[in-house]
Image (cartoon, rainbow over all chains, first blue to last red; front, side, top):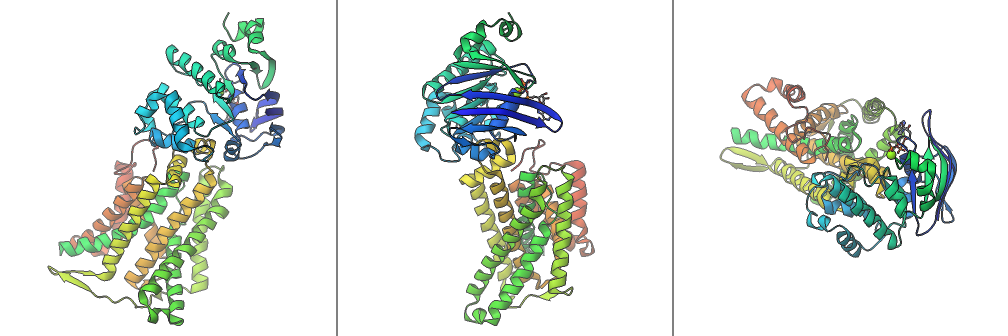
Length: 232
Length: 300
Ligand SMILES: Nc1ncnc2c1ncn2[C@@H]1O[C@H](COP(=O)(O)OP(=O)(O)OP(=O)(O)O)[C@@H](O)[C@H]1O
Ligand SMILES: [Mg+2]
């Protein structure tokens, strides 16, 4: 349902992504792993339209979405939870969620109830400013906000970053839950083991190019992956 | 005497506050000091005179003065808002990803252009506002408040309350705050940030136009350079309240109006225009984030 063909993205002279091909099929969880600076975030930001690729194309379903502005990408049902949460600190929790539903792609109240069911703490704190939430709560809010747009494809950039182990496993469980409700997920993670375990497929990104791909299981068993990303 | 100065100060302050809101909203969203904003206020004053002149010529003013004034206000706001919208589109939008100094210089360019545009098309001499609104008023406790002063205070108050509610409660208002807090994140939730920026310029320019129209009625005179000093004073008001902070701009405007009028009465009216600059310098030295501003980069 989402295809990247020979995508190149640069920051001025820095070529962060150098010709990558990827495919994400409906209903899958796909992981993108790689070391710091490999280009994972750049890849997600290229898909969501924050960055414009200098070459290649991105196809969603039948439609070429290369170079569309971010708000048009969201209206296509592709929604990113960027690195570092980025909740709106001086909007309340509820207002943050309202902004997630800005395009009105779903019925507000049922979707809100669904998010509150997934993250009860957000319901309890809905009147509080986003900036006053703890790191883990902010991550839940960031994911909840993305869900408010009723996405077809969710792009998650390091959702477990900076969370306590118990929160990490909760976030991974939630990702699975969201996926089982029919949302396709592209997951970028440092926590490669946990990510690959719940993924149907994975890609390994090194220096802006994809060096390995396969099913989650295959990658977990791959010597190179075990060595470089699983610390074995 | 004191009460009189308070009323005069409040009148002036309401006007500063209306203009300051435009500075502060644009700064909150773009981190741009829109130097051309004072010129939109000046255009509002001229447009008011021209439109009301037309209504007088066609006999509408004689038919119903409130209707003529109401329509003048509406049209002035619409035209000025279109100017503001266009200025952003032509002079600032193409520089969106340029270094911060570039749009600032562009703003100064627009300001010079608009001043000269009005000077050439309307003449370099003062224009007189048709003395349609009587200087009637009431006197209580030897304090005189004219109907015009009362209207300025009331109209400004209503507009500011509406703006506040708009920013707090509506979907677009919340999106404006979201864009001010994190532009690229706002686009990732589906907000068209360019549209929100245009709306901000439209609202800011509309408010400046209301101020321009009311001041030209109040003083009865306009010329092509009134935008300059009003602009600097409103900017001071915005900084005083904390630039980027909307309640701060309202508060800063009214405070500055009061300081000016009390200063003129009790210190010296010779220095009327100096007070604003002294305050600007003091606030920048002592508390650059303004009286209501937070110390961080928090906005709106
Ligand atoms: N705004 C930028 N300007 C210049 N170079 C950048 C910019 N953002 C990223 N880069 C560079 O592009 C490369 C890829 O960065 P990217 O953020 O995509 O890596 P990443 O795989 O997400 O890393 P991490 O795991 O640390 O988040 C890096 O070399 C980085 O230095
Ligand atoms: Mg990254």
